[in-house]
Amino acid sequence: MLRVRNLRTGYGSLEVIKGVSFHVAPGEVVALIGANGAGKTSLLSAVVGLLPPWDGQVVIGGRDATGAPPWESIASGVVLVPEGRRIFADMTVMENLQVGGYRNPDRDRLIDEMFDRFPRLRERRGQTAGTLSGGEQQMLAIARGLIARPRLLLLDEPSLGLAPLLVKEVFEVVRGLRDLGVTICMVEQNAVAALEIADRGYVLETGEIILEGVSEDLLRNPEVMRAYLGKGYREVWE
Image 1: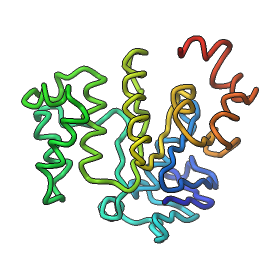
Image 2 (image 1 turned 45 degrees about the horizontal axis):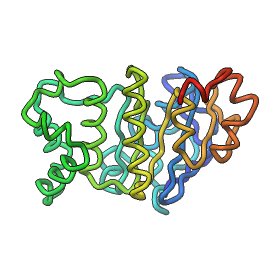
Image 3 (image 1 turned 135 degrees about the vertical axis):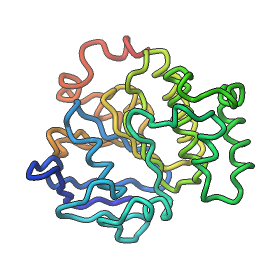
């Protein structure tokens, strides 16, 4: 579904992604974990064309998409749910969903499907999006992305700024999407939450992949535990 080879990019003369390679197979959930400033958001931005690559290759569904503009990524079935949710705060829940499905002639049916999947959004369909709780805003952002019927859903820090209870709720939503067969690539600082539901993971540090493997192995990896999880992490998460 997605293959990134030796990708390099940055801002001005500052290189922030330094030869990164990773892949996502159809139906997988892949987690890219790392501390703040590791380059996770920049990596996703380069995948969807928001940040021009300096070198390397991005292949989506077998097609070379290196440097393609964002609207071509959307047309090829890749949808990014950005960091910080980026909902339209002054518009209603319904209007946000209508914007998400503007390219789809079957938009109304898909909106009803999202309301079935996220009942709380149905209850707040006429409410201004900026007045929703943080967890509800994240659900709205995910629902808005799903209306585009993505082949690959990119989630950028879905737990950012949420209380622990809401983090669990949002990741249950992601788990449900995984069970439906949605292909997901997710970047997260919350390594526990991400690896608990992902099939595989990559650890990104200062713009480079330093570890990769199946999630269970990464959760038991002493280096990952020391750097990202901490003592007793399972007890805290559970």
